[in-house]
Length: 147
Image 1: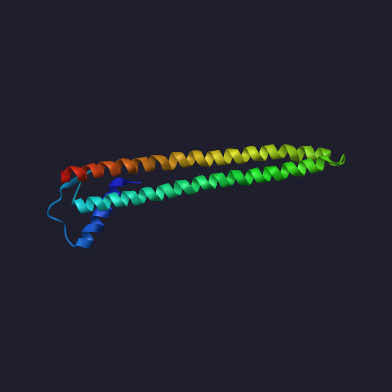
Image 2: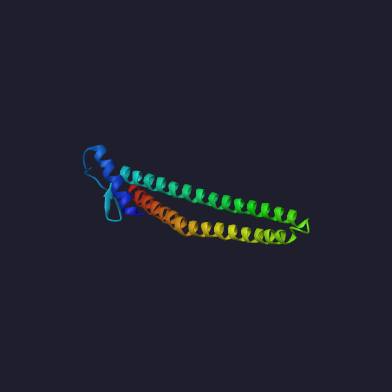
C-alpha cells in the first residue's frame, strides 16, 4: 500500500473531473500540493482503503474461527468413534488409535487457526494503523489551512 500513490491518483482524478489545475493549492502533503476539496477527497480515499483492510481483517478472523470449529468438530467425531470402538473387545485397539487421533486433529486445527490469526495481524493491522496516521496528518494539514 502506497499512501502517496493513493493521494496522487485521487488528486489527478479530481482535477480531471474539474478540467483544470486550481490556482490556489494551500494544502501540502508528502510533496503534493492540493486544494482543501482535493485533500478531503484524499482523506475519503484513505478511509475507503482503511475500510477495505478492516473488512479483509474481519473476514480472515472469521475464517480462522471457522477453521478451528471445523477441526474441533472432526476431532469430536473421531473421539466419539473411538469411544464406540472401545466398547467391543475386538475393536478396542482401533478405538484407542482413533481416540488418540482426535487429540492430534484438534491440536492441528488450533495450530492452523493460530497461524492464520498471527499472519492476519502482521499483515493488516500495520496497514490500518498507517492509514489512520496518514488520515490524521492530512486532516491536520487541512485544519491548519482553514485556521
